Image 1 (spheres, rainbow, N blue to C red):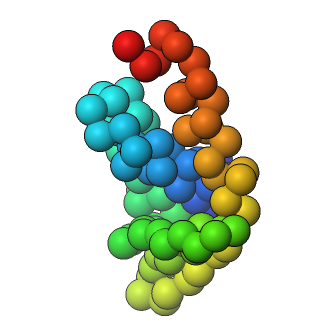
Image 2: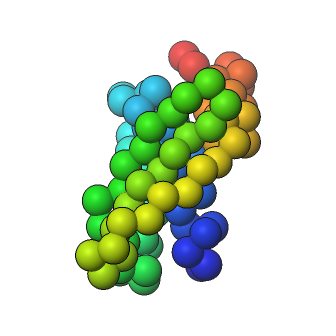
Length: 90
């Protein structure tokens, strides 16, 4: 998996996991993408902040800090899809 894809996937599922702390599947999936980032791409300390229109992802690779900005609507789309599905909200 490409670094950009892994970063976006981790961010998207991390947002879901943060919003749904009792959702075991979300927590496990977030851990899975963190392993990909760590093992395959040598990413450490990923974290994010959000503003009105975007998420700002910060992370380190080989000691160098990097940041990427993602459209809030794109990132939140997975959470919105999960929360609009009645079988996931019982």
